[in-house]
Amino acid sequence: MRIRLTEGMSLDTGALSRDLIKMQYERNDVTPGRGSFRIRGEVIEIYPAYTKGAVRIELDWDEVKSIVKYDPVSGEVTGRFEFLTIYPANILLFLRISLRKLFQE
Image (cartoon, rainbow, N blue to C red):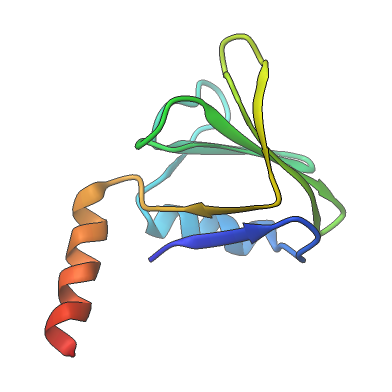
């Protein structure tokens, strides 16, 4: 289970929110931290549990305008991406899904 985002793609924020929750991310619009996300208008911020920093996805209506990695403390942009893959917040969920696929083959 993972989410793939690409600049220029159409994105339904409701569906993205549901998918992130299924991947054990917590929606927190007040004080986000690792393993959480928030949606403010046309800006989505995801704080992966498996890396330092956060990811900001800016939309133009329902189209992904930009994907950047930034430092949540300073706000400094540390990277720009044309595409990004988001993995589950909990490694145990990732392992469980991988094992299920392995035994189904």
